[in-house]
Length: 223
Ligand code: FES
Image (tube, rainbow, N blue to C red):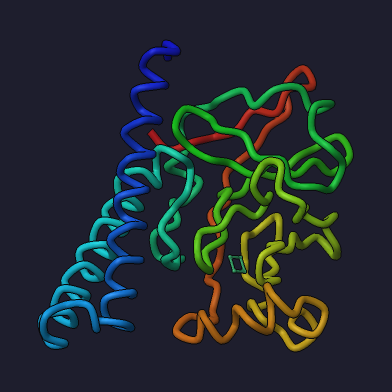
């Protein structure tokens, strides 16, 4: 991508974001303090209009920009949508096995698919990079202080809310927000379990077939 195009893109995004925040903030202010408007009811109506318009604009930003920025909508992934291995006919090279840390998730993008690779000795496992709970990356975000932990008992733990998955079968062996996780993580656990009250379950995660050839990790993907 050229620098000029990147600058134009950032300008559009910045203006859109600032406009969205301004509408939401203006709406809240008008609802909370409509006194300067001629009548209180028109202030309230204007505030509500701005707030709703701002939220719609924010939702549109998430829908349009989320996938471009690698941010997925916080909706659960269903195990019934997982693709079986016999449909994985395209093999992609994820790189040398030496590039993957032992027992810790490292995310790669193969074609357009986000895949979490976990090296175990001289072999490796490949899972969907997004946690089925609310689609946050099980390898965390690059540069974020929250780091994925080393696998334990052949299971990988999503660092966000503590769901654990078998790295061979993808089976969800521990659900998010266990009392142990919540006690150790007041913000990600205790607080967010209240915010995500509508969804506290994680279904099985997608797995991909892996073979090692000449020390390279080769991952099977759907067509
Ligand atoms: S996103 Fe993984 S447990 Fe919530």
